[in-house]
Image 1 (cartoon, helix red, strand yellow):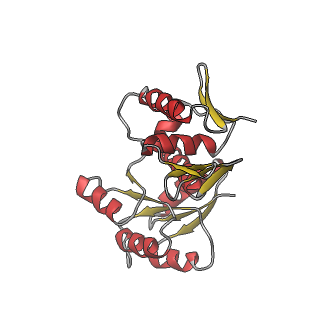
Image 2 (cartoon, one colour; image 1 turned 90 degrees about the vertical axis):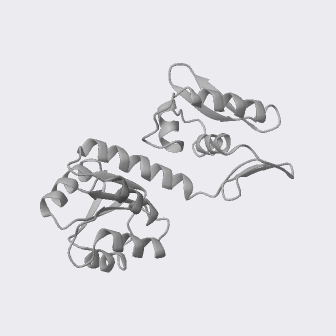
Length: 224
């Protein structure tokens, strides 16, 4: 079960978040301030942190900086009343992965949590193998029959995303959310353009192909 740590000095916020998170099937751990949360993290493994900024003793900025220096692969969503661009930028500079301003819509926050967890689950896998083909995310390269191929970054990321769950259908919206981010404002048809280029590069050389599921999206199939 996914375990989420909620760090906020407001008990009402903690209760609200716990209610929604538990409905989604997550296990929730609560802390009222940063030092308490640090102590919990020494004993309990968590998959994501929802972090308030304005807290007594240790604020969210300091907590985030401390955590990312030790657990750089632990996703953090900052939850705060401070919505100015400078605060958002500072949060990202310290290593936070997303930034939600109070008052917030709980359903939107749940959506962002799911998106962030999916991205980290993909990133935790460094390579995917299909027969003689290895898709190496660490080096952004594809190895096949002792040859090395380098695809443009977005095409590689689409391939890796599809390859992470072969046979699963991914909608354009899911691919945009995972690879361009939840705030992407461009045309979703950009996915079609990248997929077409990716298909051309794969050709008949590799043991996989990308198929279109009409009205739904794309999926990766293994050949042979």
